Length: 255
Image 1 (cartoon, rainbow, N blue to C red):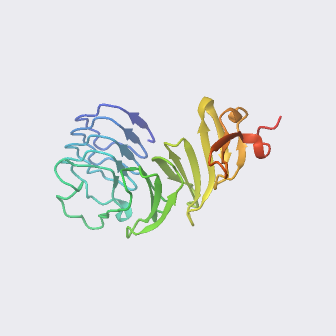
Image 2 (cartoon, one colour):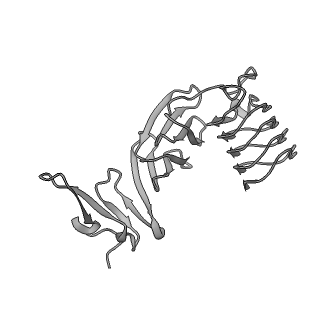
Image 3 (cartoon, rainbow, N blue to C red):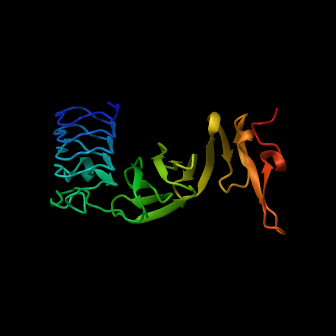
């Protein structure tokens, strides 16, 4: 299906048997929502109030629940294809400290808690082979996990504000993240090293920086109005702002 629904009122809606493959449902009301025998393969449900909802879907491979309310929610432990169940992050329940404490895990269901972020988890994604997970947090970090055992594999740091989104490349070799610091960052998924940093600037301008911030790779034609260097005077300690082209021309801005 691959559809997107935002701020839709789904209270007591009955989608029994529907095809919601790779669908995205964001920020709506879904109390008493019925998804029994639904195909939720690859679906992402974010910020939904699922109080009293029935999530006993037939297929739930790589299904994600992000920041949802899960009071009296049914079907939270049913296993999916290959023994992989729903992945939950940042979900809450007014009844219990854990989203799904009231039921025993079904055979083959994923019952794993991934702990390490120092704040709310904003997003997460499965690797193409299903062996790893990446999570994005308000603490400004990305974290890689072993999907089967829950062990942390790496912490990716570089964003200066909350990380809002993350995704794998189709081959599983790279990761991309988007942050509230208005930057997109490309990472090597094997070693966690940053590959590229793209800063989004006002007026739809952008600049591509070296991963260590030492220089510019390219920039849009009008980006020079927003770019510059901050240099600290070693004698006075004062911070001086210099034009971006002080140390050489910026690629992409040459006349």
